[in-house]
Image 1: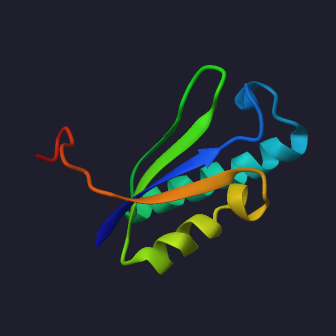
Image 2: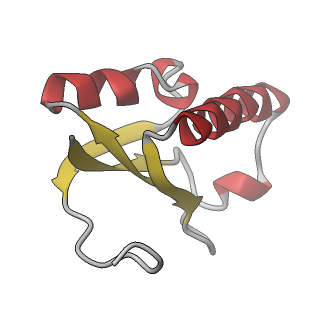
Length: 99
């Protein structure tokens, strides 16, 4: 299984601090999906960058590029148009607890 990294770019600075009610609902759905996928084993890590620019980062496993693209496209934050996704192939080279 291949590893992928996706950067989820927010529409504005200080996004996490300025969520509208609608945006908060979408991000709640996004978080629930990530938790489910983590429990199922396809997520390696997820988290946001902090400070003024809040970019989400996720490393995950998918069989191939079309599967990785589907993984990203099915995220509520992306499918709603709220966040813009940047997908790249990735290789976890060192991981505490794994190597």
